[in-house]
Length: 64
Image 1: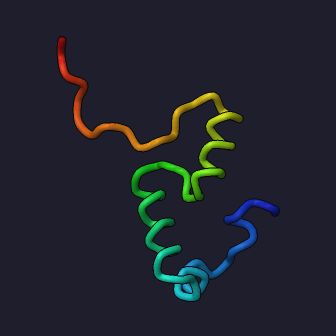
Image 2 (image 1 turned 60 degrees about the vertical axis):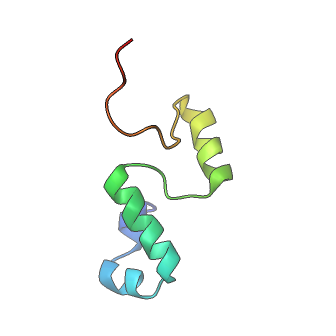
């Protein structure tokens, strides 16, 4: 299985071995549903999917 879930068996051990910033970035991406990559990666995924994956303005849109 070439998916990430198939490649990593012991998640706790995998996350414990990472750098603090990487683990926090992965946690944040998991919580928000956004990609956990640098700007060039996010841009590439946006171009492939045709979706805006950038961080938007929080809250409901204002009525005009």
